[in-house]
Length: 182
Image 1 (tube, one colour):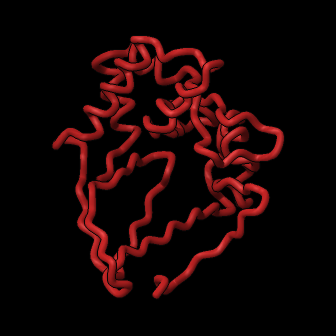
Image 2 (tube, helix red, strand yellow; image 1 turned 60 degrees about the horizontal axis):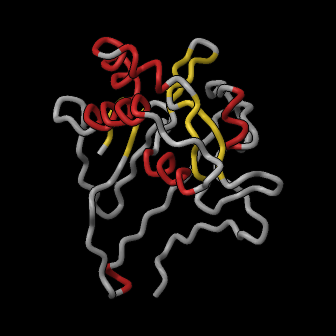
């Protein structure tokens, strides 16, 4: 399932500007165990970010709600919850959502800061030849859009054309298998 974060932003702005503004304020976000050296297990970042003439969005409600497990993280406000509810409702609406059915060999390219994406449940199989096998690749083109300074907390490097995205954790081996385990 995919939906344009720009369209969601614009709909929120038209219908409930107070909720759009709430999404432009920092939320606490859980790192879900991918904690760079010297960092806390959570960080702050707005969902809607305006920078260098662009609207850049980063939204994963489960990561925001996950940060609530830390006692020192302030509780979500009713306004923040209402804003996320509206964003979720819009993203899941038949008018804004596009459903895609992947088949073996399919490729999907999305701009992660302009498209929200989620998946539905799927059934995996015990047989290696039937197992789900998904690879994710983060591309950073040389002429890519500039990211807001706050994204440095999430991605480390934010300069266009450099490796940005993903979390490098000590002891983690980066690899991408083309064939599933057998």
